[in-house]
Length: 72
Image: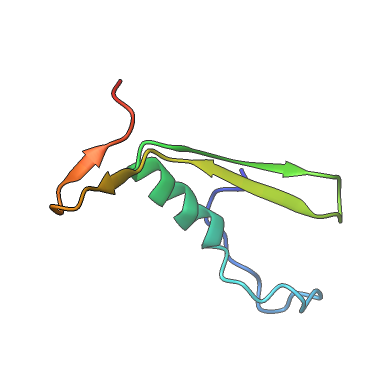
């Protein structure tokens, strides 16, 4: 649920939350497009959390060709 888009109400009593509600949804979409995984780990309500993502990346050799690091 935390990775879905949402909108803040304009009359919200909590003015500290000024975001659009798209950040984690966009992150999830990018990670999904790269066939990766993303998740959050939290220390509890009102405490910090860590966002972790894993994606497969390539490296460029000196000739400029992209090589896949892991062959599956």
